[in-house]
Image 1: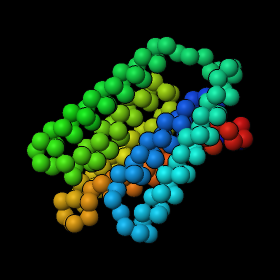
Image 2 (image 1 turned 45 degrees about the horizontal axis):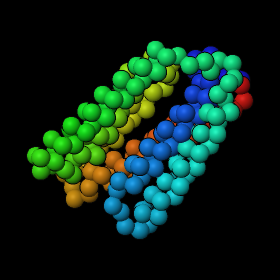
Image 3 (image 1 turned 90 degrees about the vertical axis):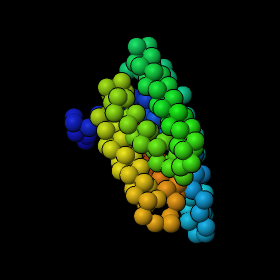
Image 4 (image 1 turned 45 degrees about the vertical axis):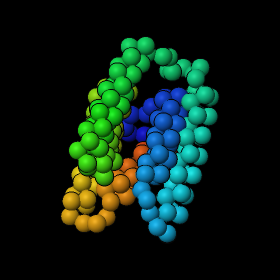
Length: 182
């Protein structure tokens, strides 16, 4: 039995969440330049994330016509605006960091922007758990920054691995919340 305090996304929304976050987890797992055995683990993470994205696509497609899955055009527009602002901020920030000869911090900035974009998505997607995901991603960005400043470990290794794991975990959780016992 599920608690009424835990939102249960529609199957379509959960599928889309798993699809999008699975794809982005795969991208994050590809950021770090790592030696073995971590490289092998990142490849395994990428494969699992891609499989999660495929399952998400299937769940979204099957849930397309189900009750409670009607499209909200207003929410769709707000979603697109938030994502457009996210991409613009990350892209502009990456250009600025590169011009400032600090390109090793680009993954930190992008991770922070990704974390921040989940906060305005909470009301749009009606998923308060996105606050936790956003906060965790901000923590990963901070850990990557600190690591880059005080050690020889690259920020990309910390941020790519951490963001990939968080997005994959959230994608899997979204699938479980929607397809598990009601």
